Length: 361
Ligand code: AMP
Ligand code: MG
Image 1: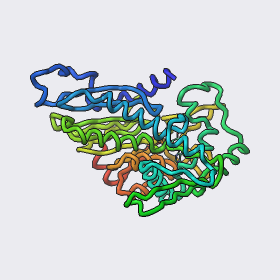
Image 2: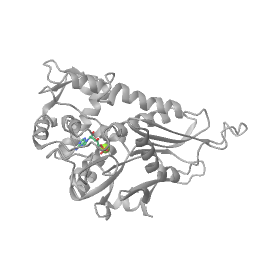
Image 3: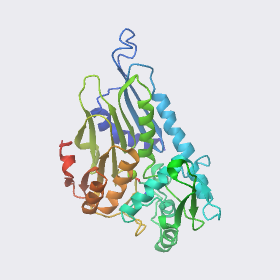
Image 4: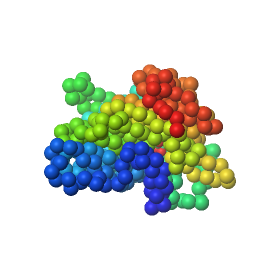
C-alpha cells in the first residue's frame, strides 16, 4: 500500500513543481502581513485511494486539514463501494429489492448526471460496471495487494459479470417535481448489479472543495488535486496564471506539456498508466469498455478534459478514453468542454479551444 502511494506521489511530482510550491510556505508566520497579503499553505495526503495535493492562498487560517477531512468524509459517506458507511454501499446492498432505495439529494443529482452521460456517450461511460470492475479487482491493483499474482478473468466469468452490468438495469423514480424537492428512489432490476462511482468521485469532490473555498473570503486562490482531477480557483497573489502539467503516459514522471489557465476550472485526466496490472507480459488498465468488459482499446493512452464542473470533467475524461479520439471529440464539444488526447504512440491531438491553453514541453 505504502509503495503504491510512493509511486503515485512520484507521478504527481511534476504537477507539484508546476504549481510553484516548494513545501510549506516560508511566510507562514509573517504576522505583520497577515490580514493583507495572502500566504501560501500547502499539504499532501491520501484519500479516495489517491494522492491529494493542496496549494491555497489565504489571508486566514490554514484550511488544508478541513479540506482533507471534507474529501475523506465524501468517501466514507457517499462514494465508497467498500465502506459500509457510504450511501453507495447501502444502495448496492439493496440491489434487486422491490421497494427500491430513497436517495439523498446529492446522490440523486450525481446519478442523474451520470445517466445522462451514459446516454450521451452511447454507453461508453457507465457507472453500472461494478460487477466487471470487481472481477478485474482494480482496487486490488492500486493497493498492490496481489502484486505478481494477477490473472485476467476468464471469458465465462466475464460474460456472467457483464450480464449484470449496464445502466438499463437501474431506474430513477421521482415522486414529484425534482426542482420542488421531490424524493428520488433508485431501483435495480437485478440483485448483483452494482454501481461504481470510481470514474466521477474525484471530480465530484472538486465541487465540494470549490464550495468550501467560495465560502471563505480569506481564500484568494487555490489549486487542489484529487488524483487525476484538479481544481483551479481564484488567482495567485502575483496574478500569474495557473500552470497544470499534462503527464506523459510513456514516462509518467515527466510532463508532455502544460496547461495555462485563468480562474476557476476543473481538469481531469484518464490514463492507462494510472492503474494497471500485468500478466504474462500483457498490461491491463483500469478503464473498461462496457461493451466487452475488457480494458478499453481505443488507440489512446490518456485523455485530459477541461471544463467548469468537476463531475463532468471526470466523467468526460473516462468516456472520451473509451470512445477514442474522434467520437470523444464530438462528445466533449457537445458539453462545451476542451479535450486533449494522447495516442498509444504518443501523438497529441486536441480541440481548438485546448490549443489556446496547451504548450508542449
Ligand atoms: P477514471 O480513472 O476517472 O477514468 O475512472 C476509472 C474508474 O471508473 C475505474 O477504476 C472503475 O472503477 C470505473 N470505470 C471503469 N470503466 C468505466 C466506464 N467505462 N464507465 C464508468 N466507470 C468506469
Ligand atoms: Mg473519470
